[in-house]
Length: 437
Image 1 (cartoon, one colour):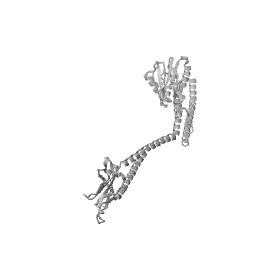
Image 2: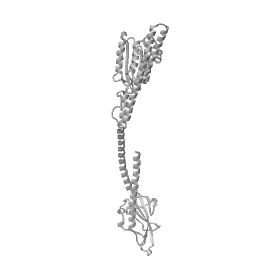
Image 3: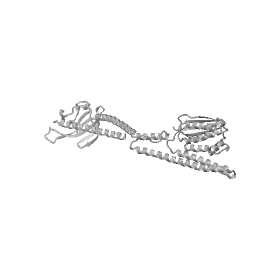
Image 4: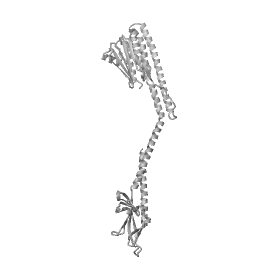
């Protein structure tokens, strides 16, 4: 746009200079005709022959004028054109260029005149001396409105032409960018589908310039999945390797009661808690590195409700759960099951008869609330359990690390959970996790 504006300015200036030069050339032609038509009379005056003159000199205020003035003060014999009527040419800002002098002057009818002046010596034929001459100043003036009109017409044509050209260039650039960047937009959309879990790879055909990028991204995704898969295998192997010796130690302690056996059982229990805790954290951390994780919440909640209802059937615990369809957790199913299962199982253990579970969408997150009608906890007890994962009652089955595992896994996903009092009378756990927007 700046280039077009600068080019238009330069073209306009060049055209005006050319129009001005053409106008000046016409004035020089009229000056030559005026000089050719001029002759001295016997008394030393000037006589003009009409056949050499431009007929515009005869029309009043025609825009073309001449004036002949003797250079000697007080001399007679000057003439003016009929077109000047009773006016005179009074030139200003004169500039000499060789034998010619150029300038400007105000003209009749508020015209702006371009003036050409030249000194001419005319011989006086009435005297016998051939060198007897009289000097005159010939002035020819033309109205510059014609130059202004031509320049204005040219500028108008130039403006609309350059405006159409500029709009065409902008449209061409927009089309070129839109078409040229279409493959990159397809890559971006494909990555969005992978991030949302609707695809596992960059799919589709890409131009030769983009195909290597798509191939490298697919290779990177595959490599990440392989690394995470191997890490999970190692974690699983480690879990089995540690749990078997711990089970043997626990069995030996049960078979040989005594102070040493009690100490062994306590240490085995502590080791099992720590193994379960850190294995859960390791598995959750590994799952975060895999693109495209996407888990529907409703079926997971339904499965957990069915399983826990059977486990706690002897106590007649009623589990009321609800989740909107189309709600997806941005993560792996087993991590969601780990967190939801711990919260729901904890609520079932402490509930008297009722557990209520609700999942709701909140922008790019979803909120899971688990409530029970049990005895509940004081504010100090909620802080003790929620932050440090400590057990308050050893008579209830479990490792005591369920809430700590929920806290750690939710933090890995950028979520969090809090404990509060429930309107049902017991405890309410609120878990916030990322959702598919």
